[in-house]
Each structure stands twice: as structure tokens, then as C-alpha cells.
Amino acid sequence: MISCRDFMDEIGNYLEGDLAEEVRRKLEAHLAHCKSCTVICDSALKTIRVVTESNSFELDDAEFLPLADKIMERIRLPRD
Amino acid sequence: MKLREQWGFVPNLLQREPLPEQLASAVSLIDAVLFKESTVPRMSKELILMTLAVATGNTYWVGIHLQVLLLMGMPEDTVLAAARDFRTAPLGDNDKALLKFAVEAATLGRYSGSADERFTDAVALVGLSIYLNAVTKPADPVPDFGPWTHPSVPAPDLCDPSIAIEPLEPLIERAFTERPVLRDTLWRAADVALLRGQFPKTDFPATTGSSQTICDPDPDGALVASARKGDTKAFEELVHKHGRRVYRTLAGILGDQEEARDVMQDTFLKAFRRLNSFEGRSRFSTWLITIGTNAAIEKLRERRPTDSLDEGLTDGEGAFRPRLLQAWGDSPEQRYGKLQMKELVQREVRRLPVAYRAAVVLRDIEELSTREAAEVLGLEVPTLKSRLLRGRLLLREALSPHFASTSKGALA
Image 1 (cartoon, rainbow over the protein chains, first blue to last red):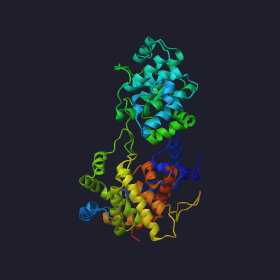
Image 2 (cartoon, helix red, strand yellow):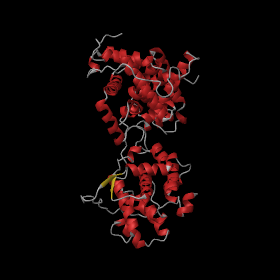
Image 3 (cartoon, chains in turn purple, brown):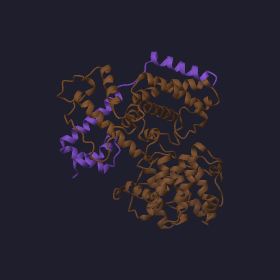
Image 4 (cartoon, rainbow over the protein chains, first blue to last red):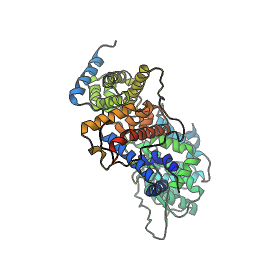
């Protein structure tokens, strides 16, 4: 049986889905009876989802196109 | 040259001057797996490679190994019979067992029967064969011998229910341990996923689509080639294609829109000026993001020169213990409107220590693979993973007050 400490050691790979079958099973067995680790794991997965889906730092066309033009203007200038 | 020494000739594929990195790796791998003495006799190894080439339809390498076997003195009838169908060819039982194992492993990702230490060698040979398949097609070499037509080899029959099917994983691990160069080369040049249960039935392996692999050419290849010759229209297309992404990464790392705009311009200018030194080892977009990320981190150092990138990092085991153990509701993203969510995430990402912030921005916002993100930041993969985890857990803590089921959901 693995401890919470062991679980936290592997949580990174668990969140990435990057685990050998055997290890994953052991971790899930731990989650089945450990409320704290389940909460951490669940909220961590949701955190990643929220961040990925938040469309943060996006530029719309009105903001982006003038920037693109400015870049090309500088590129087409003779080298300074 | 090793190849000439061992084979008596150098295959056309490997005669390029200078040898591109992937092909140089092929030579190292051939040396470590095929030429180096091990439990399996050299001739048997060539036989295995020929059979694997037949099974995976790689006629180029069939020709090579067939020729080598003839040069090594195997009777022509035997060689040709083995190429047609090893199961009925006049070969020893040992060889047949190894061949059966290798072909099953390569085409089905499993094996039947018991494995001994010779099978570790066979796994290494399967790995070599997959790698050679991967590097051969794009290079499209002229066949050295032949023409040689590919006979159809029926897939091995594993339908006998009395035969237990074994997974390859433990043997692969052992092969990697005994032949580190196998792991290094395959890791570097093709997805390890190839070997981890995704053995192809065709000669060219599927990729997981993440980081650049040999069989997965850069979608920007043509545009980059034109831009290199001075075609500014082509470069403009690249700006439009990748500009928003670059901005997003920079804004995430810098935490400031104005600065992000400035650095974005500098990034593209640098990229344009350095186009000739871009070697195509990674995708153009990865290279571009690397330039941008470096520029952003440099900018942060300029801002606060006394702080290092490692500011705020916690060291060692146990230094970071998650607190705030309230469960979140099922759909946190529905708690707030889109704009509020966006601002919340932006604010909290900005608050992360830079090293963690960069990892999270690249992996969770830009959705680069772990390997690409590590490459961009110039880190070893385990270091990147550790920073990514810390970043994610810190974000979790910062967001918890907003999304925990019992909270009222007020933005602080």
C-alpha cells in the first residue's frame, strides 16, 4: 500500500497521464480510500483544464493585425 | 568507417556528406546493437533485421541485409527462403524462435512463448529496425542492390488460445538498460511511444503528433525555405500564423501586455535575421517560441536584476505541501463569466515565480509537449516536469478559494 507521500511523489506523472500501468493502479487504489489526495488530484486536474480553456492572453484581430504590420515594416527596412 | 569494415560496403543512405544527425544516430545504433558482440550471433542478428525489414515492408533494408548475409557466406537458397517465409525456411530452431519473437514484437507489439536473454537482443534489434524504417523513407535512398520485390509475408498466427500473450514492456526496459544508446537515440529522434506498445504494421511508425519526429515534417518547412531566400511575403505568413501564439506565451511569462508587444516584435525580427542559422532540428514554431521565451526571461532579469530566475522556488522534498483541501465543484469554469475567468487565470499565472510560470505557460497554455517545453526552456525533462508540477499546484491553491464547493465564489 502506498502512502500519501508516495502519491504526491507520483502526482506529476499522474496528471500528465504518463505512468506505467502498474503504478497507475496503485495510485488509484490509494485514491479510492484517501479523501485528501483525491481532492488535491481532482482540483489539480481542474486547474489545468481551467487554465487551458481560459483563452488567457489572447489577442483579437483588431489588436494583432497592426502589430503584424509593424513587424513587417521593420523587417522591410534596410538593416540598421 | 565501421560500416565498410563490418559490411564491406557503405549503404547509399549513409553516404551523405556531411551525415545528418538522424543518420549519424542510425550508424551509432547499428554499431551498438548489431556490430557489438552479444549473446546472439552476428549472422542471426542480420537475419533478424532482414526478416523485420520484410515484415515491415522496408525493401531498402531487405536488400542491404540480404546482401550482407550472402557476403557472410549464408547459402543463397537459404537466404531467399528466409526472406520469403522464415517459418518454412531451412533455419535452426533457435533462429526460428528468435525470428518469431521479433516479427510478433514488431507487428503486434506482443509476443508468445517464453523469453530468455537472447530476446533482449532481439528487442534491441526491433528498436533498430523501427528506427531505420523511420529514417529511410524521408531520405528515399537509391537501392544499393536489386531490384528486389517484396513478397507478401502473412502475419504470424497468434490465434492458438493455449499460447499466453506476453507484454513487451519488461523486455523493452531491459533492452534500454543494457543498451543506453538505444534509449538515447530513440528518445531523441522518434517518439518512445513507438516502442511502448505502438508497433506499426506498416513500415513507417505513427507519431503521437507532439514533438517533431523524423516522419513528421515541419508544416512550415516550405515557408521557412522561401523566407530564408529573402521572400518577405513568406515570412509575413509565418508572422500571421504564429504571432498570436508568440504573444500569448510572452504575455503569460511577462505578465505585461505592452512589454509582450515589444518583445514579440523583437522576437520576429531576431528570427528573421537568424533564419540562416535555423537548422531544422526542431519545428520552426518551437524555435520561434524559444527565441521569444529567452527574450522574455531576459527582460524579466533586466527589470529586477538582483532576482534570479529561481526566485521563489522551493527546494527539496517536502518543502511544498498542498493546503486548502476543500473539494471543488464539478464545473469550475461555469462559476464565472468568460472574461472574469480569463482575468482570474491571467492574474494568478502572473503571480507565480517565473520558473514555474514559464513551465505552466508553455505546457498548459501553449500546450507544447513536455519534451518541447523542456527544449524551449533549455531544461532536462525531469526538471521541467518538477517545475510544471509546482506551478500547477501553486495555481491550484490560488484558485481554490474561488472554486471550492463551499465558497461563495467571490473574486478576491
